[in-house]
Amino acid sequence: VQTRRVRARPGEGARLRADILTAAEQLLVEGGTVEALTMRAIAGRVGVTTPSVYLHFADKQALVRAVCLRVWDDLHARMQESVAGITDPFRALGQCGRVYAHFALDHPVQYRELMMRPGPDGRPAAAERSFRYFVDAVARCVSAGLLRGDPRELTLSLWSAVHGCVSLLIAQPDFPWPDPDRLVDETIRLAGYGAALASRMPGAPPPTDRLATALDELTARMPGRDPANP
Amino acid sequence: VQTRRVRARPGEGARLRADILTAAEQLLVEGGTVEALTMRAIAGRVGVTTPSVYLHFADKQALVRAVCLRVWDDLHARMQESVAGITDPFRALGQCGRVYAHFALDHPVQYRELMMRPGPDGRPAAAERSFRYFVDAVARCVSAGLLRGDPRELTLSLWSAVHGCVSLLIAQPDFPWPDPDRLVDETIRLAGYGAALASRMPGAPPPTDRLATALDELTARMPGRDPANP
DNA sequence: TGTACATCAGTGAACGCGCGTTCACTGATGTAC
DNA sequence: TGTACATCAGTGAACGCGCGTTCACTGATGTAC
Image (cartoon, rainbow over all chains, first blue to last red; front, side, top):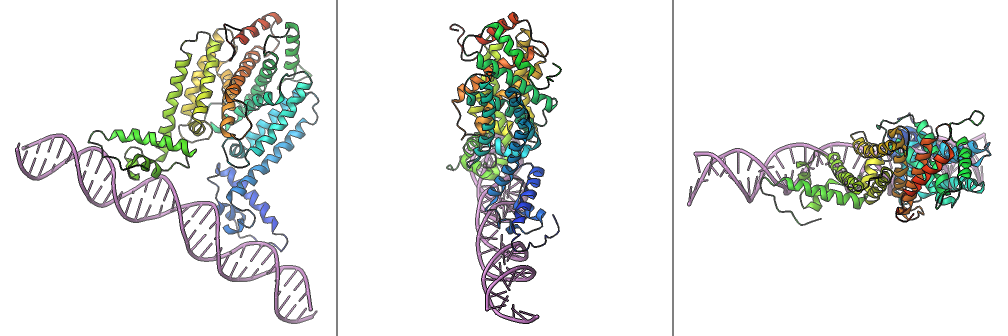
């Protein structure tokens, strides 16, 4: 609850929209669920009456969607930024997964809202966008010969491994987890080995020496391993 | 909505409790969420007035918990049953994962309620019970030399891989998924290879010939591969 | 065999709450003449 | 420079709904004497 907001001058009414989004995001994080987020509370925090919210959002659903999708933009910015300097495609893929996981753990409420509940509307939009990032990163690994097979299929498995890790951390906070960062790294390491091997061994295993060489290459690129100090 | 229920004879009042549970389960599955499940609807389907529900359940939360935990018993029964005839520990572990995944896909609403949302109360109970099954199966693989490391740590990764797969299928039904059964098998295959390798390669890789032999052994035990027809 | 009575399994009506949303309105601001 | 007016950015009060839950009650059943 806030002191009453000063009325905007004509032409600056759109500033309220941004403030509503910010207040709604705060309250969503504090409340933990969409159900705990009310139009009255949002208006109250901004310092405005409830109907004023409807000046900028058609209904509650539209507001919630805008709040959740806003933070999602940040994910893609962080992904691009963190991968920018990495030339090795396998390392870049691992970095993508790590950024994705930490993003989810940093924004558990929005992640749950968008990724952990079904929704009739354009919910898949967010999932689809993140998914494409992963597909591209996997495709580069396939081009480099580090993985084999259909990039989309491989990505499904890798994505679900990372998602599984963070969604369990989010949904089961009382479970006796180890350190989340370590768990994420371990999950990515395991998924990386798994994808590399499973994609190489649909039928007969490759010649032993080539396999060992490939594994050495992968191992050197796993998270938590300094390339300068193997 | 049902015709009015005939009054139970003294001593048989407890039968109503079972009927309430059944009706609540049906409505929960039809509605898709706990929020869509109302005490009035439950009472209506059983053919009784709303306050009668409070004769057997303290409040709505207690009822929902009873409904969700009831189906969970079925999971453990199915797990034990399906693993009964399997002597190979790695194969048994894979079968555990497959049963778990198919259970989740068969009861998506209950799975989401117990595993995909946070809850202040004894929510971890269900997770902890399933988890212990997996830990035991992993521990047998470690004893047999197929996996290495702490069973609990290994299980976290395997569990989150399977959970990630099914929870995405449940939460993102509009996503263009491939066949769920195949996706589950592929996830288990990938997690199996990943766990085997990641647990064997914390530092230097093992001698090449022993590694290749180990991988051959694992490959023969992967889902979808008939042992009589490799 | 008949009757008073305790008990069990419910009923009927209502309370109180908080929610999303609507609708007629108001008052300050800038603009045209 | 002064004044009428359109517009923009909100306000205040209320509607209507559905929910979980409570509370005083009722009426059939079995039992004791």
